Image 1 (cartoon, rainbow, N blue to C red):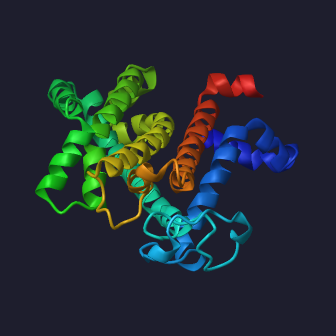
Image 2 (cartoon, helix red, strand yellow):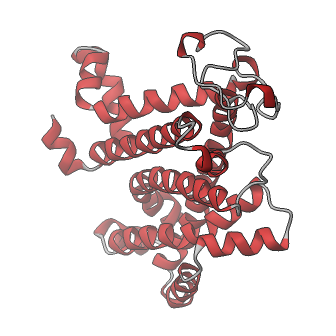
Length: 298
């Protein structure tokens, strides 16, 4: 992350924003797409209608993109089989997908970071923690979500928990691998030899070295969580059906695909764009935070 900040700080002296865009096209493109989608999701109450309003008289109306910027128009993306506004449901669906993706990325990386630091630095805990992580990796996220929904009323928190649990072991393995590498370096031996406590060594010397790969991993976890949430909603194991999400929109409209393809196209396109944007940001951050790749790009 320090490489990106230094690049941005040096941009005014070396040509401004154009240089930064030329050297980081994937970060700029992916970030722009994500910002646009995030703004649309935050402004949903102001730019979209009621996603739950049912008007059977207007069912399966084709889209009219000329009304895209007309507030209150129900034919911007067309209507579904119940006459609900596809545009409103798509925009509100972005809220759920982005919330799930960001929350899963935050919780899995935060928990995985501290567990991975403990596993990599303390040899006595390594075997116990990694065997526990192996057991967690054996739990399929979809089956866990189905079981949790069957036991509870379901909802966004349940989906976030069900997706976070299988993602934690992947983060732990990544952090542990970095810690095992950094722990053998001379500056760690020097810190230990002068009497630094393990907590100080971990927080001051080891933790900063894990942040760069962890940030990149967080982007991929976010994209994966959005896809898994869409799959769970498609199967009916995600959030309740009355809450619009891209997954349940596609599931509810799949029977009308040949007659009203827009009911599947628009939520599917938004899902693809968001996942693509997150992966572009992740690839760009990987290129900037890897010193070997960064030198080749200059």
